[in-house]
Image (cartoon, rainbow over all chains, first blue to last red; front, side, top):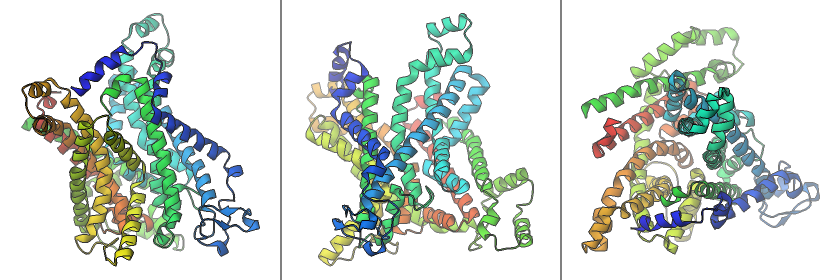
Length: 303
Length: 310
């Protein structure tokens, strides 16, 4: 009954609506976008925004309460969120942590798009044994629980930002490949693609110029919805001591760092956790909004 | 039916081989080699060479892989560098704790997720639906290990205020299981409620639901007998698939609460750079994950016979 009611609404929507117009109507998604823009600015301008050096220690300010004045050598501001076990400013570390989290999200997702789109296009376009090999490989990757695979791989490669990018790309490209493959399978039968082929266009040209531009919506949506997963994976790996090398301020490592003092100084772990939660939530809301905007029919399913 | 089961099981074999190959490769691209990494550089090269020889690590790589697969099939995953105990025994020691945690978390997931999803579907568009949507989405956005730590702080504070003595870590009594199960279970209950809501809305929009309503069947009966029963099919599949996620989530939960399960054994292996333990527990967990997925597929085909044909 209820879903039936929605169908005509979707159909009677003015034909002129663009994804952007549909996106703007979704207040939560817009809120997500605003938070993301804020985070990006925070990450870019971290050195100017953060009141202190994120790695500067002041053992006299160990676990300083929020609002404690900072020594002049630390930057002379106040510990707005307090200090950690080494007297480092929690607010500054949280702001610098945004850099790592966003970088992890953006760089690894870019790699995922590059690998996934390439593999998915090859599998979908050429079919036969190319498809067999790539699809079997994806199947095996799907068989690993993500976090477990990431743990094993980070252990093998060693901690560090570059290895983190590689690991996250390797564990997650298969999902993108599967999506692109199914898009390419549909699109390559279209008349304009057949026409381009008949006109003698090269395969790579057909894929890049005629097929992929028409699959761009789902690719963008999937990449956006992949960012929170990457950020969460970084946090989990850093929490297990397998992420970025300390003392680099990352949210996951900060949460881990505060664990020993959880009952006496909970803020050390609580604040970076809130940062992860808000960031992941913002990307989820934004991604869901994008998906609904690109594919209004998906919304009916209520997902 | 039997043919489908056999076919599905056989299809799992290449996947399992691939899983073992990837695990093996990962453990052999450790910079340097596992023995030097584990034993540091204080040992003289001759000693390391003899340890390597003892472990068979000086043989050609393909031979080592075949040996690894042969061992894995017969339940021999080598011995820990640290404790010298067989890896299979370490996993076996941890398994009861992990199973208890997983089973009680699934219970929490079902008891919390399905009612919440049904409620959100029935009250679609109301503040309750919106609250549930935003609440679950926020909850899913928080790292599960962080939620676990918040839960510890909460119980610790309550203990202090009321003079209570609720356990916040360890694994001595069944009471110790309650907090971890609630944390891990509610994390998956949040996503299950989203799926339940979707499935319920789908069924509530079907013709047979409308027929039932127009016959004058009471709303309660429509929701529980007609709608929920049919919505449960996709919902239970999702539960099956999420058990895999729960299995890895339990690694983090076991670490926070100090539960001596397979996950904690993996983490201890990581801290000690004990590569046979890591290799064994990664392979073991991945194999369980694959088997669960096969079981889910098979049980789904019982419910929906159309699956078998495709």
